[in-house]
Length: 94
Image (cartoon, rainbow, N blue to C red; front, side, top):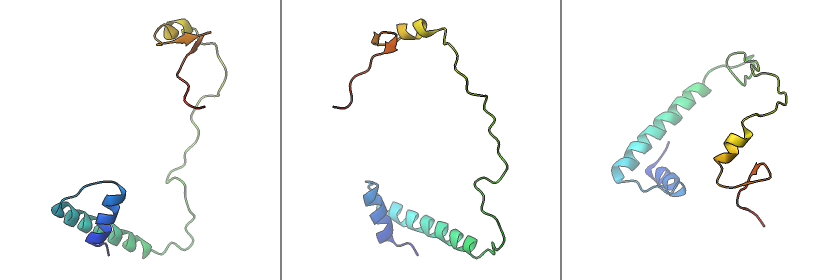
């Protein structure tokens, strides 16, 4: 069972300021969510194989092959800074 104290703790971790009404509302909502998960735990899943996705999925992407990009100059013209055919960006590490 979720308590108002639990909601206050989560709000603190998330750096949220909640009103008393919001705390009560979220306490009820989170409690309902956990009740639903408890209902799911009651299901007999003996013999059910774990799935990573509910329907079969296949890689539908094209073969990855290198190609020459012909609009390089047009794109580099939009860059704030360019050097030797590449975008120049600020250094972010020492």
